[in-house]
Image (cartoon, rainbow, N blue to C red; front, side, top):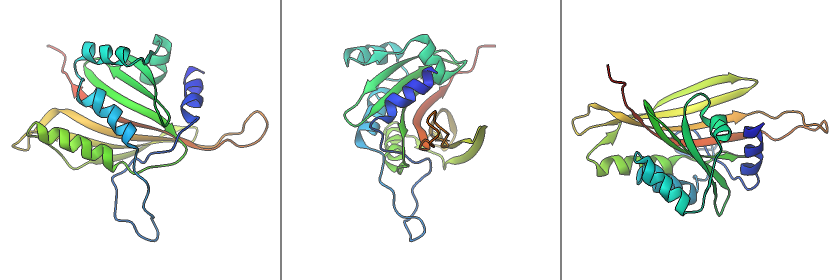
Length: 208
């Protein structure tokens, strides 16, 4: 129920996102508009510039006036994984910022969307960030996973590599989870929508 309420709040002014790398447009697959600059800027501000320093990230979120999510609300997004979260009221729509604690230490920004957008600006930001550290991103691994009740999660996984091409503990992920139309209480079908999120994750192995 909590997740459904948040979905409704985020959908009020949603525009969209897409869960695959851009391809050359053609007649069969017209070009899609990119994810917004606001979406990318929020991810950069928190997940690139502040993460993995959770105290600093939380201080910025509080200083920016974002509402902290309750433990139940955080759980609706992270499920069994512990963490923190904030609701962000953007100029274009609402977003949710979450931080998952180790061993999979992750920072994510998500929104709900009625349409798909091209993910190219997100991926470009991640690649530029890796390059600033002398690293690069490996070619993406793509996966579509049915969740049930017609819900399908499509994702891209980008492993970060060091200057010699060796895998590091850090990765970036882009997800679009499609929720199908359902019959509303008034008997009319709802519109399908997507949960879109971009994630920066650092795997911290447990000590033996």
